[in-house]
Length: 300
Image (cartoon, rainbow, N blue to C red; front, side, top):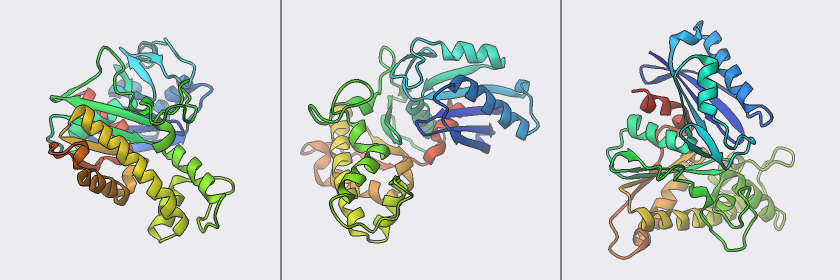
């Protein structure tokens, strides 16, 4: 049985061909903000063509979308001007294959539950990339509330803080996303001599992490502040949900030392309150492929 998983990110769109719960081929392209629908269809056909398959060979397609999705329809938080568009119905009619569209972090946490060997009944997952996503499982079921729950990136972190794309100020997305890490790095680097190698004017999160591992002083200052912010947010999640497990995924899943530091600090602060139940805080096992592999959970 072949499945296709699509993960629409703020920077890249990832598409994967899956067979027997294994990712057998993957395409990564820069996200096309001007015509994401055409790009999704094009990438599906490219993936099939590369593997000598037809659309009829695919039993299901999942699409992870970076915003609020309710019953396959883009509700809000759309960066692609698709609010109220029934993406699921349109894509299904175009491709002729069963399609399920959900929030990208919801698909990621479902994949981690299905394939990541996590036995916890209650899981909160944070995905850190261009933005901040959240997926929640309560009593082994994806929690969506009345629709669209889990927008963890838009919890307020600082009153009257940095302007967010959602229209509010001070959302946590502007403090702990990898984009926020890069932006903050530029501010700090402008005030002190730095040894971080950059590509032109870009300060990539990967460059900061690499410099940190090599002992760069500037990178230490940048990441120490970032870890403090991320720790405070994780402690908030501990207090709100009291989950068994908190997973940290997205690009930061490739920096386990940072996540280990967060886990240590959370334990030191007794997971939010004295005598709180212990929370297992760890890297998401599937890395950046979790959003693609969500198809395995959707089409069991």
